[in-house]
Image (cartoon, rainbow, N blue to C red; front, side, top):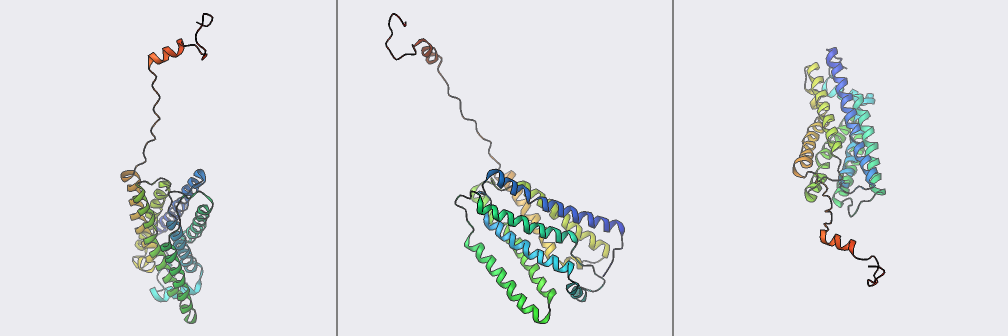
Length: 279
């Protein structure tokens, strides 16, 4: 296994990695807190959450196996050379585990909070069913030959595909509603910061090793960053440029004619006709 050639680059790599972990991890909380405060998930697309859970679950399987399994690492070195570094860092594993947990919490909120007429679409259910059925078939194929690296590459492909499609339902929903209300933009801005740091981490490792195999060996991490940057930028444009939040209009104050006000004070409070006693 290769070692770092530059101490400063190694430190930069670690800092960028944990920076990405921090912002990506924090990015889940604004939506969770918003749902709690509103006691409603109206405006949050349920397909987005379900596809996101599938995405992060497959990414966790890939990262944890690549980072902890000596058998997988051995096959990786045989494929890309013993001079290369494992393209998965500790922060990748930590982020994946945290992402699965918080996405599951959001999915639970969908079950218990007000959701209006929204529901998970049959298309999303179909996609998730096909994905996990495919993963099960790949597992059965990999077991006899112990093709663990090949199997993990399929999970990496799954997370790339889920990254490509998971944002689409929310983007379409925002377009149809002409609003981003209920979808927390703070989540997106933090997500964007994490994606940029994640990409920077890969660049730093490649600079140190003088090789771009880091990108080829972990295409999932590369696509995760690039696709996230694209869609987060799109959501930010939707929120601030296309569908900015409308200011709440104050209710008009009823205008009372001066003459009516004067008459009201002059008239007797009683409904009885005026007499000499009450005039």
